[in-house]
Amino acid sequence: MLIVLQHDATQAQIDQVCDAITELGFEPRTMPGGQRTAIGVVGNEGPIDAGRFHGLPGVLRAIPVTVPYKLVSLEWKPARTVITLDNGTRIGGEALTIMGGPCSVENEVQLMTTAEKVLEAGGTVLRGGAFKPRTSPYAFHGLGEEGLHLLVKARERFGLAIITEAMDVEGARLVAQHADIVQIGARNMQNYPLLREVGRLGRPVMLKRGMSATVKEWLLAAEYILSEGNTQVILCERGIRSFDSSTRNVMDLGAIAHVRTLSHLPVLADPSHATGRRELVTPMARAAVAAGADGIIVETHPNPAHALSDGQQALLPEQFAEMVKQVQTIGTSIGRSIQALRGAA
Ligand code: PEP
Ligand code: MN
Image (cartoon, rainbow, N blue to C red; front, top):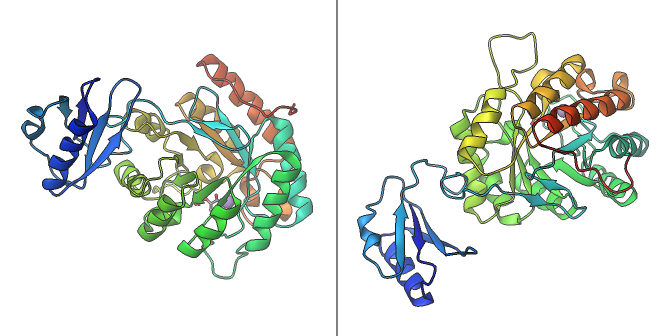
């Protein structure tokens, strides 16, 4: 339920509505707006009787929110969320956001070489895993804290923002001290203590869709983060499991278009993990932007044959640059530009 107040409602009237909500055992969330204040009711699982609020002084109307993911929904907040990072990158606005980088941070030369190419191509955010969730316990699990320091060094040198994954509560605190965006990976989409923690850390979060999560489960996972007070959440479609193993996953383009009708949060696409094959990444990046994605996150590596993880899906730097150009062409045709950093090609 969302209770919209009259434009001239007084503080006493706002307080009275909040008290009425608290008396019902729920939690009021006051949202001051340019024109009028709205108060959201959270904590209820089923419907609330709107009549309880209609008679209160200062109340214009009470609107039921019909979906379980309330704070995330467009019903709750019709204006799209735009997240602005320290380097000026805006995510969720008219301009598309390009994030690129290696699957894993491997060493300084690899990361700096890649960062330079990402910047030249028009990217504004550098990705790179320092803590890697690997399917096999014997695979490379990332450089850990050293990887974070290399990412920070790349940010200082190139001005790119940095995004990297946190796998647990402890790690999330550490990542949030260094990264511009904390990534929650597909395998952790329903790690509720971790979601709550990143909700409290106040850093922008990119929440990847679990490989077998429904759209509803994905949005409810985002609701965990918003319910702790962090509204800076980016959704990321990265492919879901199917019966067909010809691609690593199936990129759910329909979900990209669909979540934009359900939620105000920005949605990015990751065609690298969605396809698992280099030659399919650029076509699916184009398709994702055509479907309404607010940007893309793509793996690129200067020497994919020697990558320590996900080499088979990493674009060569020149392929990455060509992909950005093609994405730009699609974007232009639907009224979206690419916001490069000043000084970039
Ligand atoms: C990654 O971004 O490298 C990654 C592990 O992604 P996902 O969580 O989507 O598998
Ligand atoms: Mn990867």
